Amino acid sequence: MSYTLPHRNRRLRASSPNRGLQRETRLHPDQLIYPMFLCTGQQEQQKIDSLPGQYRWSIDLLPEICAENFKKGVRSINLFGNSSEKTPTGEGALDPDGLVPSAIRQLKQLLPDLNIQTDLALDPYTDHGHDGILMNGHVDNDATVEILQRMALIHAQAGVDWVAPSDMMDGRVGAIRHFLDINGHTKVCILAYTAKYASCFYGPFRGALDTAALSGGLSDKKTYQMDPANRREALREARYDIQEAADAIMVKPASHYLDVVMALKQNFDLPVAAYQVSGEFAMMHAAAEKGWIDLEKAMEESLLCIARAGADMILTYFAPQMAERLQNGPLS
Ligand code: PBG
Image (cartoon, rainbow, N blue to C red; front, top):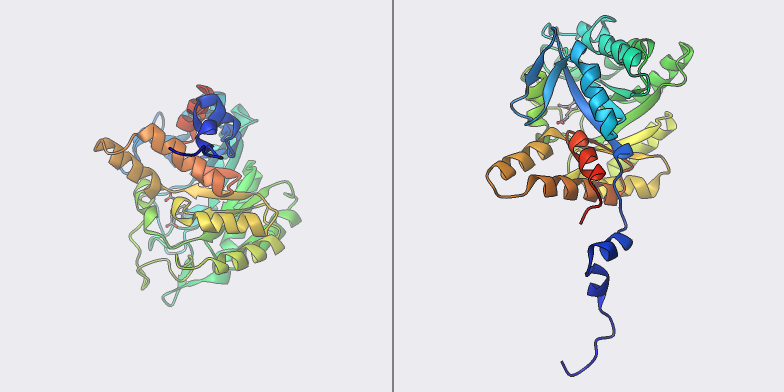
């Protein structure tokens, strides 16, 4: 070359410590929330075919696995309900002795420091698979919100730390906040699924919960979950959720919606969460199984990029594995 280059950006990339020095985003196990599934019975650890390495746990086994993960640094979990008795109005969601409230009580007794979140939605309990009550072929907003309020209270009475409404009904954050507060549960946080998109990437999850195939005149969830084409609408959803006193706002799925994560981070001052959903997880596993990508690297890169976009907390099925990875020294 006939001239001296004035800038050599590669100097800072030349060694692992230099890359570490200029790294703009770091992951820590504190950011990770582990979604977990439940089943009835004793000593049951049921493999979930659509989510490699994930299980449905019977309640008696839950404390042990959570304690193991806690040691790795995973201090927060998100519990999903399940019920074999599905009904049109999802009464199973309101059983104080159902799987979720029982699991919360058991965990709080044995692992009081574990941070427990629960998913609030009716789809594990309805026979039509929707996240709400169907009336004349549409999901009735206000009737559904009333049930979610009662569901939140039952979880609060069992000792939950956070409730996470994932249903996308209008006004549910404020309604739940009000109902919890008048019943003395001012300390329970609300993680609002603020921008939950009508996504095909939830496919493997529906297998995990055995949710009913969608029926009842609606073939999808597009009348309540958001259109993947929209970002400004997410800002509007966030504004309402924040007015209704959400404690954190979430974008879901994560990887295909990083612009939305960033928009929420830049426009609001609440913690932002992102959910790396079942389809994102399953795709990486499937490609790795074929030998097309390295699973551990895909895990690291995908989670790092979700954090780079602005997520303060990340729900991910990789939580225990990523926490373990972070204990084993710096990323390269
Ligand atoms: C339902 C709910 C879904 C997920 C979390 N809560 C599925 C849906 O909306 O149909 C998806 C999670 C995942 O795919 O990992 N309320």
